[in-house]
Image (cartoon, rainbow, N blue to C red; front, top):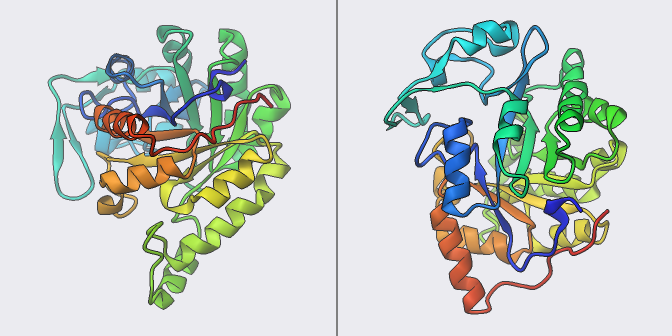
Length: 317
């Protein structure tokens, strides 16, 4: 049984890019720390280098994290392996988080071999735009999962259905799914939000979020690539949406609470205990967060007081 599909009385806590409150994102030290803090797994990001090595890294441009100006997809693994994640990382809001030392960029297979067999991994194949030329990222990620025997502890997600399609072609038994983000509509979403006179206060939704929720619930992309999971920005999810996916025997993950990287959405909505409770109460199967200890404490308190639902999916697709 894939560990993501095992019965659970609360949402699983995944360290988003590891444990960024302690170590730099997407580093082996951060992944180990996430385990030590009590997370059930991690989310990590991958790109494929020019010579078709799959590296664990979040930004396509290397400068924010390494101080070196380059594009990771234009580099060879030999070139990437010489870079280090620097001690001071820009949060994207004018502040920096500072760490004690530098860390190397790992290969995906290195991370899989390093972590225990019972520790779950959501591998996000990174994509900032749809790009047919990068479809074989999915092929190579599938090969790595097969070669490491990691089928029962990983899922694969992406914003690029070409990558997911080629992953499924290569290894259909891998659990995978499309990811949804509040910024996916781009300029159209910004235009729609001009008419957002009364925001959905419970889910902190904008007009564009509501439209994306409709697309998400319809699972059109997921049907095309035979998804068994879906990963979505927390503001797009509510209990009805989660139930719709559970009725299809699919798992639902939410991201990202308490983020250190604040470039992509409203930090305030991601940084409240109330939003963490709302997402958990919606019945999601996992929550990705940067502050693992904080989320575990919230969930433990609410489970102890019987405030969380017992509606988590218990069967394997």
